[in-house]
Length: 119
Image 1 (spheres, rainbow, N blue to C red):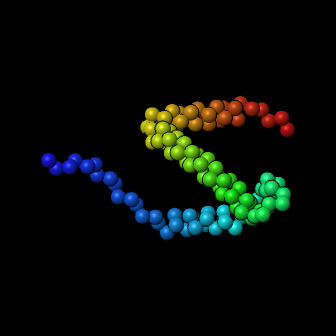
Image 2: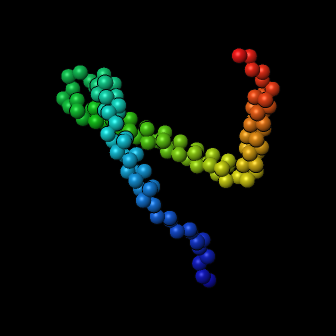
Image 3: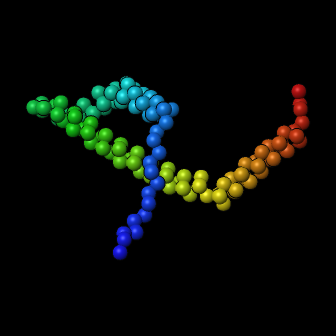
């Protein structure tokens, strides 16, 4: 019997604009001095005084911080993907969003039309 494997959509190559955006984001993050200042100001207080290798302790604390940050951002990314699937790709939710925005703009227009000019 032949294998009935599901066909996967081929991955779309990144456009030049997307690649430039990723490169800019990477450089912005790497060259941002706030993270370096944070590590130099906050983490040294957790290094044991008189330690034989304070640099190693500082690097291990930094690694733990980066792993925790990676875990949190991974959860954020998964939640964002779930939100996108539930909201953006749902025709029903999109219809309710359009109705809600239309109602809000109609209400704001009515309020503006009915407001008196006390100048």
